[in-house]
Image (cartoon, rainbow, N blue to C red; front, side, top):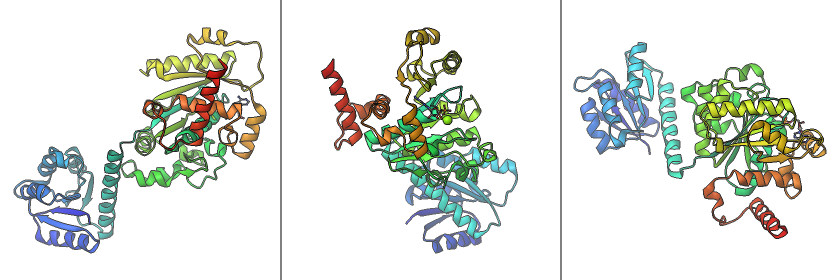
Length: 404
Ligand SMILES: Nc1ncnc2c1ncn2[C@@H]1O[C@H](COP(=O)(O)OP(=O)(O)O)[C@@H](O)[C@H]1O
Ligand SMILES: [Mg+2]
């Protein structure tokens, strides 16, 4: 039973609020001002505080500030309930650490809904603190379209999921026109659009989970909205918030980036641990890759975490790796061969090669790539129950050693 502390000097208000909460299954304790409230925070250890603003001994602002300054009150949800309706008052409330604000008189139903949302949010935060997940995030990027970003993102996500059997999410940040879900043959039941119906401060774990699509490989997908005008309404702040929620709930995130440096792209890049720059082996594409790489360095990203992938989306010609490396002033980390039949089939059926043929060269290449960007603490020991993907990768490593 969740415990709620009500702090209000008006006995009628206390009775009304506590009646509502008790009726909805909460355990309630009451305090007549901030001073008494503080004592109760320790004695009653509530899961949520509902506080009035104007009170004789210690007002609501001082009370909240005091709660926030104590270790047991750092992440305790606080709702302010008050007759003061001005914007300044609300801002003052948020400044002292209030999580939510409701003006009297209020609708009982809305009050109860907000209380339950606040508690749900703080419970999911606690849970992630205990589990301590923080997903390794891999961004796939190219300034030019058609280089194979979506292809590589989908296959890397599948590879990661097959190796570790751990929560892995593929995020389509091509918010206008993205097709990640198509690569996995997923009907667009849910997309970013579901998240974007909610204002920024209401986006929580529950809403984000509800927007994900699941795939047989174990990968979940956050797909781009069906309608372009919806994609345009997604702000960088929303992207940051959604990604940090996903980071807390996954071991791996893979981001399919658009071909730009927009605000939402930057929000995603900032949260990426490793970035793949993808280029086709021709001059314009290689030049774009160089610009992208220079920009990443200017943005302060660690060069060691930027990997260059050359993708032969057309048949091989005379260009050799050394020419490209000279041009980009750096080394190529991976070359993906021309494999039009495999990829056309993969797109037509919505089955990426990493999923349909993980033992064949193309699928294996993506699985090995996934292993290379896995968390260090995952790679250092053999998993207790190794997944098939893990066994395949390790077999290939042994084979390569043998043939050397
Ligand atoms: N190595 C490859 N060989 C042949 N075709 C490829 C290869 N990589 C990608 N393609 C094809 O190129 C097209 C563009 O790939 P896509 O992943 O959608 O690029 P982007 O997301 O960068 O626009 C797709 O039709 C894909 O099947
Ligand atoms: Mg794409």
